[in-house]
Image (cartoon, rainbow, N blue to C red; front, side, top):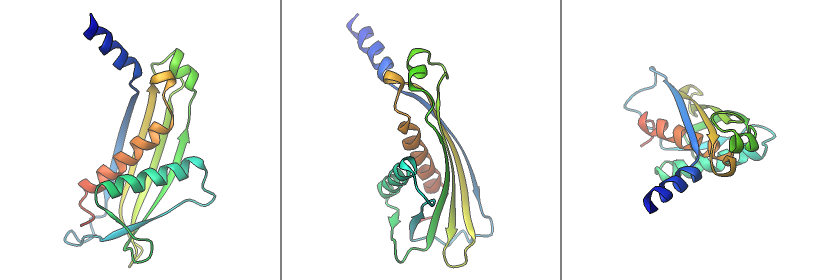
Length: 158
């Protein structure tokens, strides 16, 4: 009985989120060429959520030992963020997709030397339920993790 109670509490406290992603790598970019470092060009008039996403993306890239160099970088990362916080009360009381939070991020990796796109990545992160409706920022966390995972899998950086 105690194990079942612990399991039910764990399920109640966990957030239910998903991510879907699409990667398009430029075939003309030399496979033997590895980028050394990056900087993120943030959207103009950054709002709270763009700032938060930029911080999370930097954190995830650093965790994967991808170097952030604001002055001598060879890769520029730009992104567009479409973020909907949804309705926390609906996620909490109704669940099953009602009031879901969603973050769609389209990231572009650009070779600084010639301005050509190395790769583009799109991720769609959703949060449909969680503790007290779940924190919508979790979708931004998941999007940053997913974008970083796809960058690492694409073997773009050393």
